Image (cartoon, rainbow, N blue to C red; front, side, top):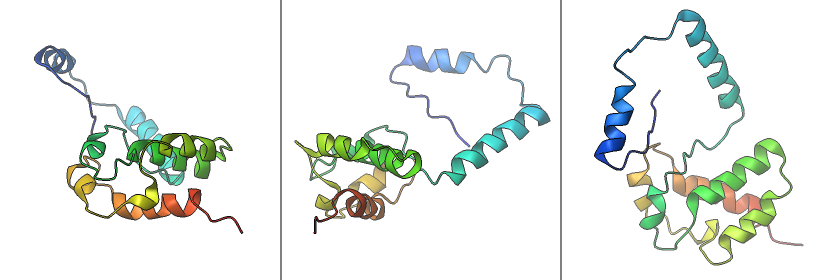
Length: 132
């Protein structure tokens, strides 16, 4: 387990480490609660993208990867009927999932070590279905 704190300057770093001055490990009861929540999230089969957007700058096709993953998560796990609309919104002026050329620049920088290229194929299959 890890926390991504999103620090971008020394003041934020100092603020984040200040919370460790009076460190107290989780109790058994607290750890049990955390593990139950992890199991619930794990069972939802979400794409564990934290939307850090590190992957987007190097994408040669300008695919808004975190946004497309969010659409996929919303559609698959919450039956969100708006997900198709938002996929269209996110890809209107940017690359679609099917535009991925599998250069893997995104995978090399992803702090979650996601198999972005494989996931892009799943996203394309879900949102870019050909009308019969």
